[in-house]
Image 1 (cartoon, rainbow, N blue to C red):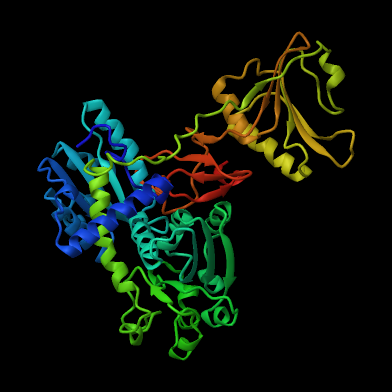
Image 2 (image 1 turned 30 degrees about the vertical axis):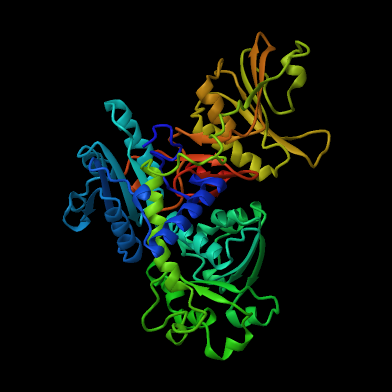
Length: 527
């Protein structure tokens, strides 16, 4: 196995962990494997065959297809397979995931952990924490493969879905028009398509779901940012009446176990909106195929069983493809496959840009000449100006109070809301005579709390330094922030000791590094 293989040791926590070229490589190798297997060809070059490699199946939620396809994929590779039984483990004694995985990691030279959890963001967090531990003790870092985490993502299901779509289209990746039907709110397989469908040159997505089951806004936004054309209908009946119908239908079951009581009470009505009926057969385009990640509800399937023996059945072949794609995924992250990859990998993580700009002081003006009515000038101290400039007075006051709480400015001060030359254009200002310096940590925190403000350091009634603060690209290492997703591994009630970490996405939205939940800027703060 090549030590320079770009796939070796890679964690697959989300679809975007593989670049578009890398995903296409995965599909090409899966196609080669499947054709060789079908023809009885030599499969040796696909097999890992490493007795020192431990593959752990850690399924903390029930699973059949994902678990069994990975189990058989690991057996194909002749590696040491371990099936972790959570019901008889120290999880029952409230042991943390990190401690459990750290223990298992110590039992072999190389490790791959395949994780299915209700908690979201687990693989990313373990990649970081166990990776740091491996570096400290001089061991090869383990690989983590996300086999589904809550409502977040299911990347390996997405890879098999995209392989199946390509197979259906004769490997034409120029365009896809797909209808996503069913429980789009809870369905992580649908959420993964926000990035997975990028393997096609252009994408049209038809969302078919009642409002209660609609795709979350964050995933819809990501699809739009990726250039997808998005259309929406509340039911299959409405969709069939639209006239422009896809021949690729992807159904998801109603995930009642994740729904609230009010939604469950309307189960029959919601199910009817996304269940196919026999009298609609003649309205489908030629060569239509239905797909489903499975399992179907045995009593009330959204794809009724009368369709099993018809040409519409694409879900059985789709399920089989899970085995082949997962054989290749294991071979890639173990370093068996990948030495012939010559495409573009993921972009390196962007270095943190400076968000603190030194402003040139053009004149040593007397401080009192520049102060607003009602604010007492300072001879020595700090003035924070342009707070929430352009916002309403209510928003500015809220920002001022938030600055005081988060920076713990329990000192003498005067502060207020003022207007500029335009009487309808407001900003906030704080005068702090007891704060003579602001350190880098406080400046970063202030930039995160109130981007766009300026900081003036006053000495002998003149400005000696001035900084303009912009929105930082990342917000982390602050006690005052948290992800508001109670299923996130960083959620305090999860007791996993994973600190929150956000990166800026669009405008003033920040996305959790672990669970992928998007937050409005003001929502990440606890104070």
